[in-house]
Image (cartoon, rainbow, N blue to C red; front, side, top):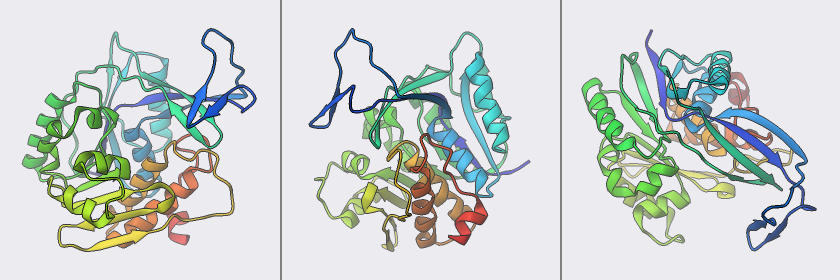
Length: 312
């Protein structure tokens, strides 16, 4: 059965440990503890996560027929990932179980309204099998051996004419622009935060955002989207059309300012595009979805449904 969207990326189990300020000493952006001691944890919970999972769940909730290609270990965590995807009505025919491997686990320290993630990526043998026909592919975080798979993904996109959206993961960004030029050249939508945009373009952080978009376009993407935390988000296409959207504020205080915020934005933006909305409307969907996601700990709890986001 054809899909609207296939997300591609690693999955994980996030383990959240909330620490109070009585146990830790924040100093100049650092959270410090004495190694070898016992640190008290105020609360602990786990959740299924990973950029591809978060976006798939978010898009499915927004009425997009979504599947996911992800590689999992042969363990209990893999069963949990699959069950959550099923519950979220995300297609799992392209989920692969690997014997002798473990599913990724990310311990996360939550302090105040921010978090620190310890990211572990198992090295899987990424491959393209009999993927279903899809209108869009959303390509995101993979492990260090991504380049060989990426080359095959590029061939697949060219052969099928599938729309390609990309949100580079941590390993992509660490690998640098030389490893990404080939995929950027065929990317229809590139979604990055401001820090990532600066790193990719090598511009000064205070550069004009429209100019940053222009430099991103020189790398190949047809439409670029830059998220910038409390400053909202901007988008610009190759025709020069530029749109800006401030954050969507609601009465409830944020609980977790970062975990899943970018993925919630991507889910809102991509869903709007797939539903035929304009770039301006897509920015609205993205900022609204993101604003609700940060009201919950974890990446998936605050995601909005299609009826909810249309009403807002």
